[in-house]
Image 1 (cartoon, one colour):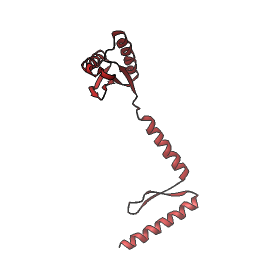
Image 2 (cartoon, one colour):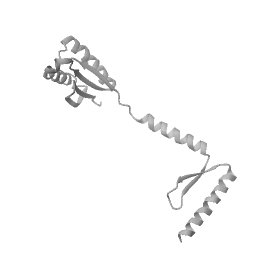
Image 3 (cartoon, rainbow, N blue to C red):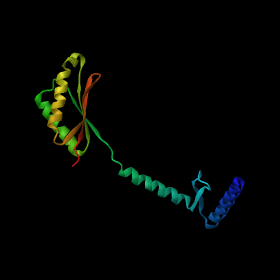
Image 4 (cartoon, one colour):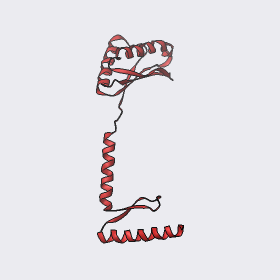
Length: 152
């Protein structure tokens, strides 16, 4: 019984090849693991072109996540803070995620509580246009916090 299926499959495939050749088209195997294998008679170059076109449409519909960074020091003064906050608001309004971090140089790591307070203050000031994705977390000499824009 299995031998008959193989013979029929080969017979059908050769007949399909002959038909495709007569039409001046190609025989494209769509699903080779099916029993019998699924084939389609098409113009192969046109088939590839349409496949690329479909992939391009799918790729264009995907959203690209942009991450903007804002760097603070543990003892950033008020004017610098306001300046950077204004930039952060602009980034969030543009739809980019914000990575705010405090960089501790040398022995300034002893001020990590000031760094955390600074980041939490930023999160509080930006809560109208963004939501905190990750609370401040110390990684090496950096304390990092992520803020995502709120959807309208």
